[in-house]
Image (cartoon, rainbow, N blue to C red; front, side, top):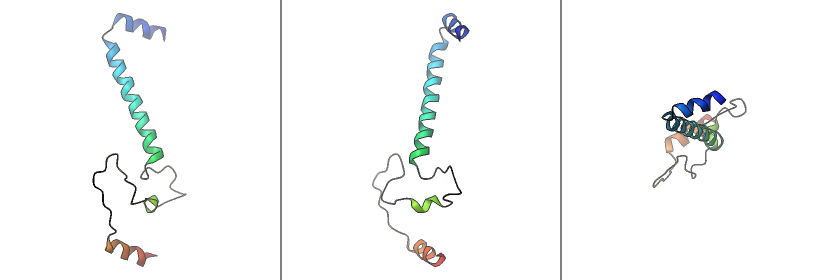
Amino acid sequence: MRGFFQMLKKKKELIPLIGFMAFAATGATTASIYFLFTKSDVILNKTSNPEPWERVDPSQPQKLITINQQWKPVKELELVKSLSK
């Protein structure tokens, strides 16, 4: 660790690069954890719920930004769903 800081003292042009890389790594980790716990299409355990898309609430937006979302059930899909049960 001490050698790392000595290298930064000698080559000061690396400081912004290391800062940007740390910011990118933190952002990627934060986004991964956010999507893991909040989005329904991320699955950790397939054995407990093999079809998680059936639990999705259509009134709740699934995107980060949703503009003028209006959800209506598709008749054909409802018919297939009722026949398959």
